[in-house]
Amino acid sequence: MTTTNFVKKFDGKRWLAAIKLPIYSVAIAPITLGTAVAYCDTGRWLPSHFWSFIGAAVCILTWLNTSNDVFDDDTGIDVNKDSSYVKVVGNKVLVFWASNAFLLLGLAGIGAIAWWQQDWTVLGLIVLAVALGYSYQGPPFRLGYLGLGEPICLLSFGPVAVAAAYYAQTQTVSPSALVASLAVGSSTSLILFCSHFHQVADDIAAGKRSPVVRLGTQRAARLLPWIVASPFAVVAIGVVLGMFSPWTLLIVASAPVAVELVRHVNAEHARPERVSNCKFIAAKLHIQSSILLCLGFVLVQWLH
Ligand SMILES: C/C(=C\COP(=O)(O)OP(=O)(O)O)CCC[C@H](C)CCC[C@H](C)CCCC(C)C
Ligand SMILES: O=C(O)C1=CC(=O)c2ccccc2C1=O
Image 1 (cartoon, protein in one colour):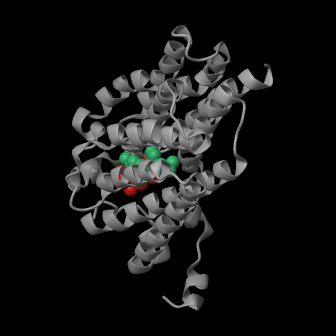
Image 2 (spheres, helix red, strand yellow):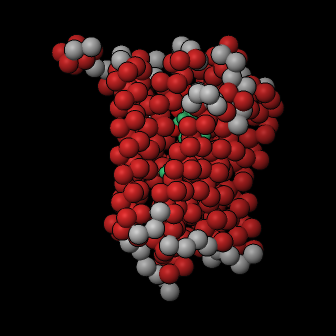
């Protein structure tokens, strides 16, 4: 496509739908949480390491989403997805190389932190997260098609990413960071779980056995409250065990969104056009609960 044609065909609404801005919270939250727990534990933070990590995480998430659309175009599963980058840009090869460029840029940002620390641990952890992300969607693995996306998501956006962010600040890892990571990891997996409800027909047609395909929408909707409750349960356990300050219970203030999500999915699970926004309600819950949890850790130092 020439530049003039591209400009003529530019459709801002489809670009916004392809970019899915609220989903970027999944990149920002684990890095902020790892940094907040490190600040809570040590009273210090390194802004240069934090901001490089945030920039890199945003680039890596852009790689994840653009390459997902390239790989999904190969299997034909995105046939009804108008907001696929491949369709919006109109040039699959360009999307493929742009996605690789975002990945390189992201890894370079993490490489800079490793260089400043003269220690490759952070880079190793993020390469592991990227490999897990690739295994979800790329050939020959495509583990998401087997319904394994949610545990991969929990592990990579939870313990792996939070431990890397904590390590970027302190060059060590703490048990409280690892327990806290399960809260952000499970609320990230919740977004992925919710994203399957409206895609059941297309997923079955393409042979993708997502958890919602395996369970059916009714049983998946009944399972949802347990997944929604898990970040809250993790924090309650952390406080009871004396690993977290009671300030982290601020996360409870995000409960109304949790209730909204459960009610909406239970009412609309079988109507794809009406349930399709539930992943954005899950993203709202992720954003609110993550901000409150980070605040809970930071307040420990501020009120010291
Ligand atoms: C791309 C993801 C979901 C979209 O999947 P799907 O194909 O079902 O949906 P649509 O085509 O309809 O949009 C998310 C998959 C997440 C994956 C399991 C784990 C990725 C790990 C990351 C690479 C970790 C990055 C950490 C960062 C904070 C440094
Ligand atoms: O497009 C999506 O549905 C998702 C994109 C994405 O990057 C992500 C990351 C982590 C959890 C879920 C999701 C999506 O659902």
